[in-house]
Length: 178
Image (cartoon, rainbow, N blue to C red; front, top):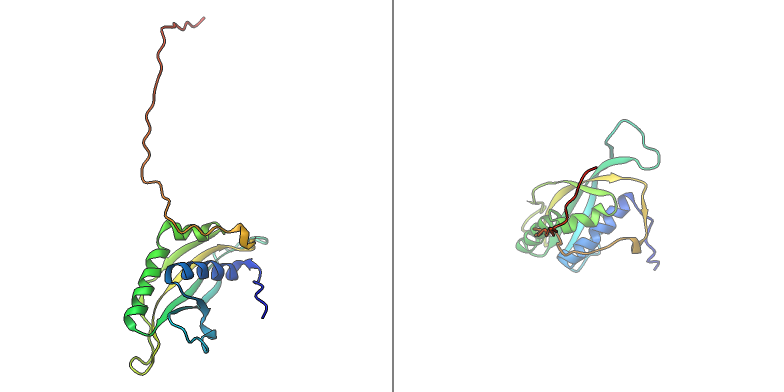
């Protein structure tokens, strides 16, 4: 089986970055919603595109078009509690600057993340419990990356405060203006 990645740009880049975050936060796989027929191990996270390419300006930017896209993200687990907790954990992490930096390094900005909700269909007879949210991204399109161009530092390194002390050395020299 060929494990070669498609070109890391635009929509696939979002999927790739989100997959790394899902793997780190939820310790599970990110899978396209249409490809879950053979998913046996739970939990897992699915995505599906809601809007694929909504231009932000009427000007056509040839090399790097800017657009909005929206993705549905759902956590699937054997219990409603597990699905709910993992979805809330992922939702919370995506709001933190360390995880937003994963996207901004690729000129992608998280725009809006909807509230987490229960998306289980046929509760009671379905073993798959589903909680999720929608997430919008502002993309500066056309940028291509290599895997080694991208950093995945999940530690929050925001500077909370800076302390500075100034020292001024005063001498006995007199300055004159001529």
